[in-house]
Length: 183
Length: 319
Image (cartoon, rainbow over all chains, first blue to last red; front, side):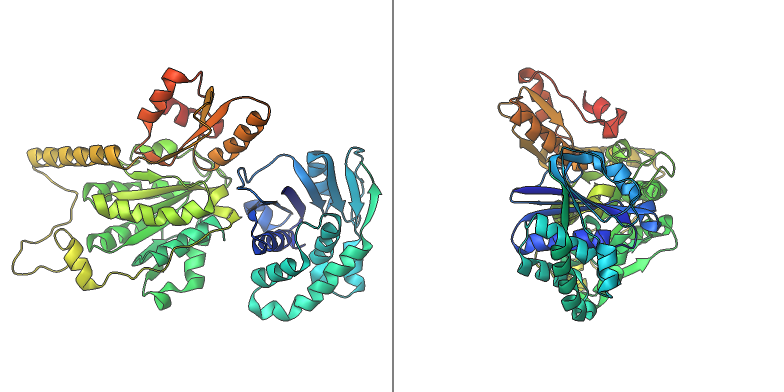
């Protein structure tokens, strides 16, 4: 099994940390992982993205131009990454702030209203965990308990009391994700 | 762990005595990691943010002169600033480790990964006829392991060793297994091991150890240079490292190092799936370079395509 993912959105949405939690979850179940961020100007405002690869085998290239899954959280990223999903692959996005919805017909498209859900649950900072929940519902590549272990590993200890809140966010993401197109 | 962080942790674990550096993207996590980790509490290692790259490399000159295990790190423009110091270190035969997390050039370039410092690295970089031991990791695991390797070679041959990483390897996170903490040498151990050349304090039974790269007597400087060249020859004979992936039955072999080698491995995988017999030769030490090995391919293989991240430099070097 090899899953190649791009997660893209605005800086501050938790794009990089969501990737980190996924990567750590993979490590927790003894898989090979790589986490390759776009750094530099992207980190200083504007768009942010990270390539995460989780695999049973040794990972060769950490940079890719086609992905099994694209998780898209703003319009700029939609413009850039819709084309990079492999045919038959998955595009998961939050329609909040998206003016031009994806148009490809050869991929599976899912929506998760994560921003709205996070606001409703009053867990604004766990927005990315709602998205992660949605992704794991579509592709349960890492087990729930390993995600929690991954969370613990990537969060500094002083934030560990927030883990239950993140778990709530993950499970609500699992519930509200909906498929809008089948490949 | 990020590649940059892995190198910093590896330096602490292999018992380094001092780090002197100055921040620059995409290398800043090295210094940041040291500051967060506070190795002065763990092993007594000194960490200092110098006022500039030039100051840092000269602190390395000072530290290395006393037989201490010292390292510095920077990225391309900062490494250019260090070249004068590197030349002096090579001339004075001082062991040290320098990390270059390469970014685009020339000039300030950009902050994306690049391999364009290849020539500077393998030719020495500064003035005078000297070499650095140059080793190029292609994973976070190797980033950690090669810090130890670089120190070993540096002290074995009294030569500055350069770890040639890049923005991709430095910034990416992968699984890494770290080696156990090794003790720092005590002052007594340093005197015992390196007292024959280092400035550890003159004792009655020996002459003064003088660390210098200046020799105004032409004949003596010539002898010194001949001795340096003999040392480089020995390193070329003994310390070459490379990795071959699917080379045995390959019709064509890609030659690539570092990040490019990782990407080319994917290319090899895709080509093999289509029945194309492609192999990958990854030089790990860039100086000494495995040129003999590559020359051997010339007799049996049909061709050697080379990735263009390095553009002119890499290709022309051995073609």
